[in-house]
Image (tube, rainbow, N blue to C red):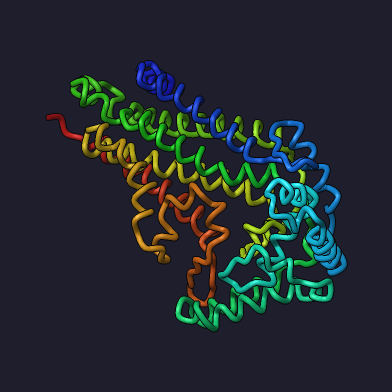
Length: 402
């Protein structure tokens, strides 16, 4: 029966077209993720492709290792040395690009200096050019000092005292010195994964919306509910079909995406903390690039299941696929128009972009315990999904013929 329900979904021409569009979109996203990595050669020209990726990897590997005070001082000195060259001082953009080609190996670390030595919410790209090697000792203390200043100033009314103390303790608990390595594979995979996940969810909503409304639309509901297993095993088969369609398509798409992007860009830097790259410097979560990506995949899967079962529940209730198919659209795009308060931080669309969740300061107090959104979201929506299953079963089982 489960096989029959799955076959019904994929036998429709519209479903096949939708799957084809998904594969095309997947290919395009993989292309953007891979081509988003570039290398600037000694002539100041930008290169892309496999060869360019290998060249960039070699340059960044020269700076791999612990970001100790000595290494930070070395980066500051090398940055100053290159700034003193004729190419860096030239007003010719091509000459400037030649100077940049000598910096790109430590460019990630240079940008970390911007965050460490600059104000908490200001970004001054040229700040590292004003540093001296003697400033290297403040690289890690600055991270905590700037957080404390921010909590006393601009964010003084955003958090409770307990939440402020939680953030400070998390910052102090980060293991230092950080480990740095070439990690473009994980950065690009995490950056574009939410796009792939959201598109996949929209497609799944289109495929599953008709599972529970199909019999009503084809006027076969009288036959379905009057059959021997119509109000029992047949309903269970529909629920299982929705589960397996969601699970199968999600993991096939995401594993293909991961294999292409990580296969081309590499898996180096899997064990590096996310704070070792500019985008993760402020995060209070102590996770590695690999752990972050696994969290992105797991969050996307849980979010997909929740939204698909919600879609099927609406479909069973209103008996119209055209209404149910709008559920994923609404749940993904509507929060964008809401204020970025703590309630918005727990909406299901957040599960589809966990790489952004671990960079945000959404905190929640449960009794005397303070938690970030990242550990709450998967648990919350796993429970809600499990609750929806029996509700969906009962709604369809008690459906009345019209």
